[in-house]
Image 1 (spheres, rainbow, N blue to C red):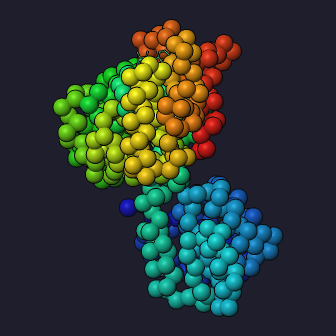
Image 2: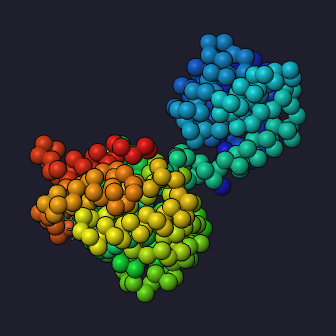
Image 3: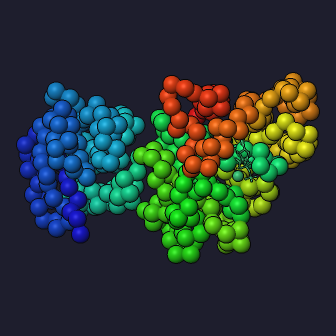
Length: 376
Ligand SMILES: Nc1ncnc2c1ncn2[C@@H]1O[C@H](COP(=O)(O)OP(=O)(O)OP(=O)(O)O)[C@@H](O)[C@H]1O
Ligand SMILES: [Mg+2]
């Protein structure tokens, strides 16, 4: 077993010696260094990479409180345990607020010190072990009540655009006909069905091994390759996978199928935003209107459901205003019709948002606007 690496930060030599003596008896612990003040502790963390810092409060140069604040924001994987004397409760509260995980009151005995370190380490180890710094995981769902309106095209390109400055997970929850793997030219990659097949749903690291790393900020969970497999992916499974992964990402972008299946309803319920995609033809307008009524009956907030008209052009005598009248809802964004760019990008497996930085198509600009206007 790896030993728990400990750094002692205290300006009083006797305290450091007592701690050292106690810890030397413990097989699972290892003192990797001693620091005489907060500044010194920060320097040593960089070099010695301790798991735990035992931190005194009153120290010269940089006191334990400020040091704790800096350590917990700079080195998220390091656990700070405060050592303080009786009567410093105000400081203690502050230390915990600044991100210390636990405290011990001096003078402490052998058991208190050892148990506090062990318990605190165990409590936070699972997070550390998986190298997480927890994120907010806002969920954005692309949905439509009619097929073929551009959900997948928009979801894929939006996810890539967002990944330029955020950590993004793209989930293909069109469980029957999901085709994101084609859009990014990765048809042989693992899918959500493999997670279930191999019964590997319990831990974060195992679920992560089924993700396709599109770029350093974007991972993708693909849909099963065959429609009949969708029946093995229950709502509970999706919920478990999503909850396991969500906190690792700033944004989760979800593509859905045209249905109100249990899985779709679940994702619509828990997501932060629904981008309701429509086209301009009458059939699409009608279905969007009906779909929006369902959203209302489900009690979703107006701000949560955002109507996006894809393949927008005014050639057919219907404009944004007319569409808004039909929907009784304002339109969040319109996206240009650009067959050449879109079909070319799908056929080559290279999303159009990856195109030239200088010659941007209208549709690329719309995706950028979409990402800017979403409050994430
Ligand atoms: N802005 C656009 N301009 C031109 N063509 C587009 C645009 N957006 C999508 N398309 C075309 O529409 C077709 C359907 O797109 P896409 O697969 O993204 O829709 P979808 O809503 O995900 O469909 P499904 O319901 O089958 O999942 C594609 O062939 C794509 O080329
Ligand atoms: Mg699709």
